[in-house]
Structure formats: structure tokens, C-alpha cells
Length: 360
Image 1 (cartoon, rainbow, N blue to C red):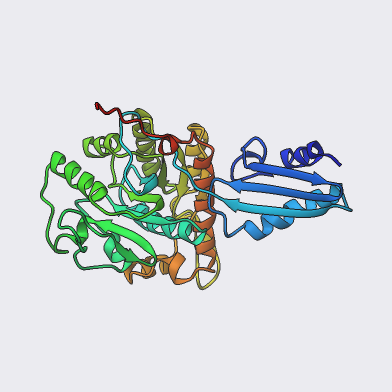
Image 2: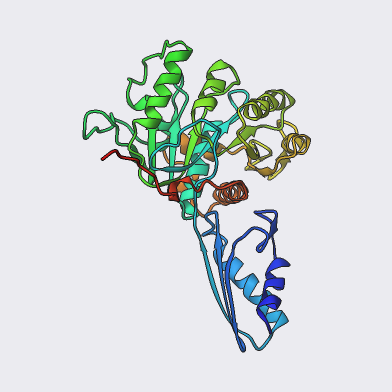
């Protein structure tokens, strides 16, 4: 048994989340073979607490099947690093990756999806945060069960509110709930930039930004000024939603932000009395949209009364019932989303030394 034999086994191990094998994905950091003793170190670029045990067992069994006498030591872990963003856009201190959650139109459950995906990333072992970018209709504070004005230690920056373990920021925390935001585009853009840059984000692996619905000038400008590593489009299967979702995809293409995938929300409704499954808004729309644009369908989420009720109470599903089927669906989507991002080009600028020239 040689090192090359073990590497061959790892190269044959396909990961559905990354869409390739462990060797090609550059996750294999070390292989040591000493007689019958085999030691393998694998470092994923995405949080995977929910599948780590199964991953360990499957890989162990695969090596054992080829070499029954082997004494196998597997070191499986994950490390999240920054990925590249748009050119000429500065990164935000304290944030490794920003993922924008968008939809072409309102009413598709984008904010609900954004909140639960942020909580799902946390459940998978990442440090996560959420920013409410909907200046006109901020809903994240209510969904996260947070309120009151953010603290400011130095009078210049804001401390994020903590809801369900997530760092949270929204314009809704700075104005009265009934106060309408009668602002023009430039004011909205400036307000969002300030919320993003003037908040003391602390060691965030993933900041989820809940973008406002639509693809107008405001959304395009925001995407051009925010350092985004990737985007996710939320839609329903309905044809009307898909038309606008396509516009969202094209918007991100214009600003050179990679679309990590599509989330189809409200895919099916299961009658609580008879168990009949109904596709109220049609079916197959998300898969069709993903196929047409060569992106992943990250997952399909049900239309459930309970998800809405929990959001209204400020206790999102992933936090309220972590073991529920819906929570597992959000976590599966979060893993696929983060794994897809991990395969994108990485940003190593933070590890390079800074050269300062001084005149004596």
C-alpha cells in the first residue's frame, strides 16, 4: 500500500456538494502511509457539521474496503477563507464573504429564505451575520426578534444586534416601525453603504445580505458597490416569478457577481388534513431556470403555514425547530451554497505582507 493508492481512492470519492472529487477540489492536505497505518487530512472550504459524521464513515469504509487490514486515521475539518469579489471594490473589515440573496420580484419569500439560510450556516459551524438591505421595507428585525437602537461605543460606528446567535443590522433598527422611508436612490445607496461599513462586524465567515426585490437602478448600484462573493436567486415555480428571476440573474452577470444557484420556494403544499401534495404555483420552474442559465438548483422549499407563523413571532424555523424537515432542507441548501462558493477563486490578499516605504 502506497500513498498513491490512497490518493487514487480519494480521487474516486465524488462529493455531490462540490460537484467533483476530493483531490480535484484541493481538499486533501496530507496523506501518510506507514505500513498498515494510514493517515489522511482533509480540509473542506465550507461548513459541514451536519454531514461530517456520515462523511467520515463513508470515507473510512471506502478505504477499508480497498485495504481491510489498514489502520485508518481521518482528520476531517473545514476552514472558510475569503473569495474574490468584483474588481475595484474594497473588502469590508471583519467579513470574509458576502452572499446576496435576491429575487426579481417581491412576495416569493426571499427574506424568510435569507434569514433561515444565515441560521443554517451557523448551525453548520460557520460564523454568520445578516444585513437587511431593504431600506424601504425592512423586515429582518421582526423576523429575528430584535429591536431597539444599536449601541455605539465610539459614537461613529454601530454594534450589530444579536438575534439567535446571528449578528444583525437593519435600517429598521434606526427608525420607528411606522416611519416611511421617503428617500431617492442616492440616499438609499448611501444609507446601505453606511450600514455595511459602519457596523463593527466581528469575524464573520458569511454575511447574508437580504437585497430589496427588483432589478432597478438601486439594486444595480448596490451590487456595484458592495464586495459580493456570490449571489442566490429565490423564486417560486410560477411563470411570473421566473420572468423576474431571470432579470435578477442578468443583473448579477452585468456586475460580475457569480450566481451560486437557485432556490425554489413554495414548491409544494402538503395538506395537513389529508396529506395531499399540491403544486399550487406550478412545478419545475426553478429547475428549468437553473438549467437554462447553467447554475445549480440548490433546493426546493415547501409552502408551510408554520414557517410563516414562526417568522411572525421572531423565531425562524431553523432556530425554533432545528431537527424539523424544513430546517434540514435549509441546512442542505446552505451546505450546497457554501460548497459551490468554495470552488470559486480564492482571495489571498489578506495574507500578503504590506510594503510601506518611508523616507528617512
